[in-house]
Amino acid sequence: MNLVRRTLLPMLMVLAFVCAAPPAAWAQAAPPSPTAPAATPTPDTQTQEVVPASAEHPYTSLWLNQNATLTDDIIAKVVANLRQQEADPQHILLLVHGFDTSRADSTAQFTTMAQRAIEQYKKRGKRVAVVGLQWNSKPPEQNWIVKMLTATLGLDSDNPYLNKVALAENIGRTGGRQLVSALNAQFASSQIDVMAHSLGCDITRNMLTPYLISAIKRSRFVPDETPLFAPEQVLQTGVVALAGADLDYDLLYRNRELTAKSAAGMKLTWLTVGGIKNPDRRDLVLSLRALARGDRAMGNTIPRMSRLQIDRLCRGRRIVFDANDIPVTHDILKYYSVARVERVVGAAVAIKDPSIPSPLLTKLDEIIHAPADCKVLQKYFEHNNDLSVSYYTLWRLEGICCGGPRHLSDGYLEWLSRLLIDRPADVARERWSGPCIVVRDGWWPTSHMVDRATEKQFGQAGRPQVNDSPYLFSEGERW
Image 1 (cartoon, rainbow, N blue to C red):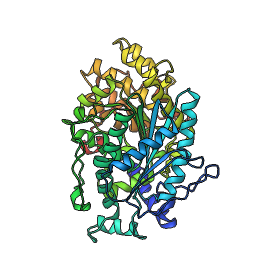
Image 2 (cartoon, one colour):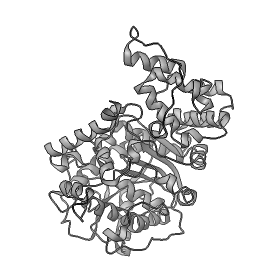
Image 3 (tube, rainbow, N blue to C red):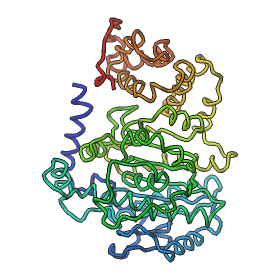
Image 4 (cartoon, one colour):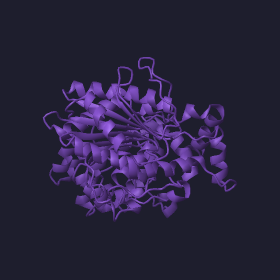
């Protein structure tokens, strides 16, 4: 029953939604905001174009059709237009949209996102210029969903979705890297922050972590594949927000030997994660993505990482997991709501100017520097509703009890968190026979967490008696 509810039911809901609504309704395309009229774009056949910021859309637009290598003239226009926004910006914000988004839709979306972000930077007294990377992500076929499904089943050789995945990777490795490289050079005192969504996260990861190898062979889908731009250059960024990330959840683990070199210039990755705190708040479009790519999406699960990767990211406070307010419809403006933009901008400003702290980053710093005392660390679970706080605390506890984050790495603790939601009374069995000392010694989940989860599921009067008898899980069921 749990398998049906957690896996098959979301798939069926997505397919029903797809059949009942046009593609633009469930992809990231959103109607123009009534308070932010969209500028009229020039024809999408233009290969590369820069549209200056205006009162109607407060960001510089960089449009890419197919050719991913930027000309010197285009780069110069982007820089000049950003200086018109702010002569000496303290922050430059880069916006990147995802799959199946027309130029008109992304213009409207970026207008709203830029307005929300500029307001938050200004509230903190910071000067910001915004550039929106708009790319040809909308498939030409009206029936691309059917073609994608038939290609997945092996009945069609053309997959419109994978064509755009390959294009996104090519843009990130070439034009995307050119853009950030130019911004680093021309605005040396500015911090480059990024807000990406869906397949735009694939552009971003190819831009900033180009050595990571995906399962998609770009040359099969992009005839004019170009070499990686400036392969030895480390691009510098502040906060890189990846919302509803259309990336394989195990991408980092599969490239664990290359990650440290590739991500050296990224100060903080802000990753939204659906279905962890609340399984019913999973992004259903990313669930459908699993059919097309054959793997879970990073935006719907905590990414699998090696112990060294987890240690490096947590010790340097270089990753945030955001499980709050996950939109099941995958909508970009719901992902980048006013509340989330406020949190992301707050972290971005705190990185550059520690005198304006971010409450979340301050809490994570406390956990990192707390004494190596399990009782002290366990208190961070109290009255906590933030996934990052729980993750960092488990990382510290595993370092004390298990010699390192082995059970964060192998997925056991994530599995146990789902068990706490599905069958909270069975958590006691893991205390009796589980592999993790943090769990066996009762540091996590706490007794209060188990009682609260049990009462939430059954009600206080109907709480079942805990069965402490041994229970053996197969490897497939456990993970």
